[in-house]
Image (tube, rainbow, N blue to C red; front, side):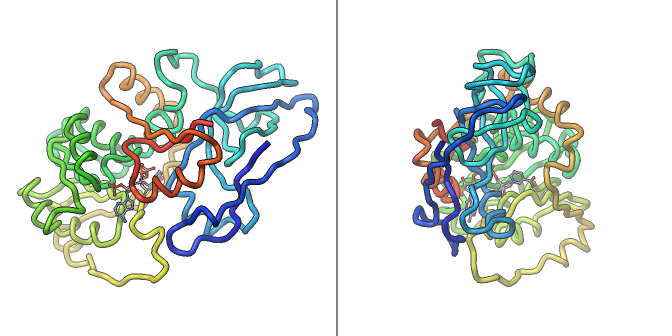
Length: 326
Ligand code: NDP
C-alpha cells in the first residue's frame, strides 16, 4: 500500500516538499477483517489546521475516502461493495468494519459514489445543519455565503434557495461567479476584482443580510458583519483566509455592530449533529436525485497527486468539491 505522510509541519502555505510518499506492507487478513482500496479521496480545508494541532511529523495525513472491498473475512461486507471510510491518504488499508459506513440502499446507480465525499457527505451536511440550526434561515430572508463556489458554499446557496431565501455568493474567479449564477444564486461577485467589498455587498443586497454563512473569516467577515440586518445570524463555519497565515492579525473589531444590531454569531462543527446525519443525508440525496441541488466536482487524477490537489484546493482552483480519483 502507498500512503502520504506529513513530512514537515506546514509553515504558511503547504508545499509539496512537506509531504512524503511511503510504501507500507499490509499483513494478511485475520478473521473479521477486510482489505479495501481507495477509489476516491477527499481533500478538505480542515486538514490544514488539523495537521498543525493534532499531527506529528511522520503521521499519515488524515482524510475520508470512498473505498472498494477487495478481500473480506467479515460476513457483513461483500467483495466489490463500496463503503465510506476515514482511513487517511492511503491506497489500501485493512479494517474490522466497525469504522466503515455503508452506502444507503436508496443510493441510485445514477448518483456518483464520489458525492459521498461532497454534496451527499460531510460538506453537504455542513451546509444543511449550518443553515437550519445555526443560521435558522426563514423564507424571504437574504443569505450571504463566501467561498460560495466550493463544496460547502455551493450547497449553502442552493439549500437557501430551496428554503425560499434570496442568496448572495462571493467567490474568487469570474468562472466561479458564472457557475454560481448557473446554479441559481440571485447575486454573485468576484471578491478578488471588486474595488470595494463593502460597496459590492451593499449593491448585491441594499437592505443588508439576515444570515451570513461564513467560510472565510478575517477581513471579509469583519466587513460583512457591518452589513447585517438587525437580529441577523452569523454561522461561523470556517476561516480559510486564516489557515495559512503564520503571523496573527489584528481587527477590525466587530463588537459595535454585534451590539447595536443584536446579532448572533455562532461557531460550529458539523459532527455536533452526528446523531442526525441520516436525516441530512436523506434530504440531500433526495434533492440531488430530483435535480434541485446540482453538484460539481473538481477531480485530480492519481494518488501521487494528493498533495497537489490539496494545495490547489487551498489556493481556490476548485469549483465544487475537490477530490482525487486514484
Ligand atoms: P472549498 O471547496 O470551498 O475550497 C476552499 C475554497 O476556499 C477555495 O476554493 C477558495 O475559493 C476559498 N479560499 C481559499 N483561500 C481563501 C482566502 N484567503 N479568502 C477567501 N477565500 C479563500 O472548501 P470546503 O467547502 O470544503 O470548506 C469551506 C469552508 O468550510 C472552510 O473554511 C472549511 O474549513 C469549512 N468547513 C467547516 C466545517 C465545520 O464543521 N465547521 C465542515 C466543513 C468545512 P475562492 O476562489 O472563492 O477564493
